[in-house]
Figure (cartoon, rainbow, N blue to C red):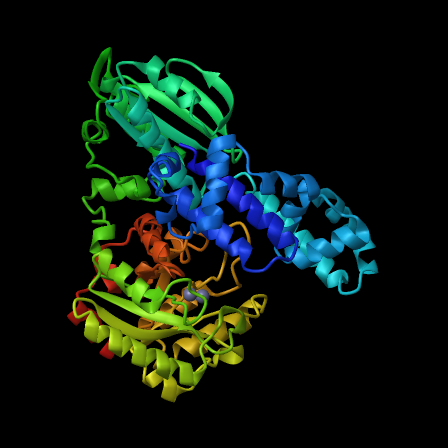
Length: 568
Ligand SMILES: [Zn+2]
Ligand SMILES: [Zn+2]
């Protein structure tokens, strides 16, 4: 499957064009890349059937580039950009607080083309020679470099999982495989992933390994054996495949899923029961007593099955012993998505397209929440536009009786906690989501007061992406979360678990703390295009890491109950 290669070239072109100051095109390339990266069909198959145009976001121009790549193995525009632009500039542009304009300035004026040169210039004060780049900016840049280094080897969950799933589809089609699954932190839905682990059971391990090292995206084969092979993929990530015997498959899957803490606890539990647990099974003396499935391994240790997301060594084994494991929420429990953008603000698709896409996902209700007036860069709606959008929603509701369309807004929380629309406007909406989109660096006390003041507004229904972080790119704001949780129990404001793949905010640990404090929670995608609605599963993954059950999350309720919650 060449999907990842095509996606990588498109992401690359987007980066280069952005550096050149080209507008709009970069986001078109990125959108196409994301869609190709996330799809399960082989782009080459689609191309052979002349159906590339069916991929969302692929027009004539991009279809021609895909065809060029599949025919020649290259895309000329990309090769040309790559030859012209120093590679390090893209990396510099990605540093928090830099961006394309500053990168160009640094290159043009100071000839800086690597992160190392930038660090030196920021430390030595050479940066200050350029107008606009003072000591404060230099300090921010150094902080950004540090942040990036801490994460650079780890890929975000939402990008790694589709790659791993694509590999499984590929392998199944080419070798005899009895069982196959993703393991490691990916299976536990950790927000970032170090490498991809795949576990399989097969009678013909050599064939499986041959298919694995022959995947089109493999750049380097580190190891090829009968039980384990390792490769480096085009994006620099390592992927490992282990082929296990059928009678050891469950024990191996358990072992390679981790976490380490969970496994250590299980091993000492086995010892205390006079048994031994390793990656091949549970044994007593020379006799293997379990190993084929994870269920039977847990059972041999006197435990019920523990879901992968709970295997963090955070009390799950004790809870299992007490019979108090949570009945975890699942994707099927969600009845609506309340954080959805349309092209009224910065969304890509029309209101109707978004509502139809929500209906296609089986939802009973959908909440439209375009940006508010102060957020100019995201096309925030002026008060009169909110009224116009409402008219379009009412009109569409008439045509689509099977899904309830709720009209809300994502309202900026301004200085001091004031909301970006007056109460008269908020009162006319079905719900309002409050968001921090500015002044991210306020000290904790001010920021916490700002957020709490907003939550105390009776028209604020939901607090969006509470920490405002972007994984690997922007640090969380300084916010006293325990206080926010406590206030939410009083105001009834639902705290969002934003499922957007670069946010996952609240994360699992926060969600668990919020639940324990008794705060209401909601899982939303913050979709800016129809495909974005599919990110719900990543939010659910974090919710499961946070021990959440369906009843902890307000948008698992039926329309009538949800409406009653809104009207309370
Ligand atoms: Zn937002
Ligand atoms: Zn949003």
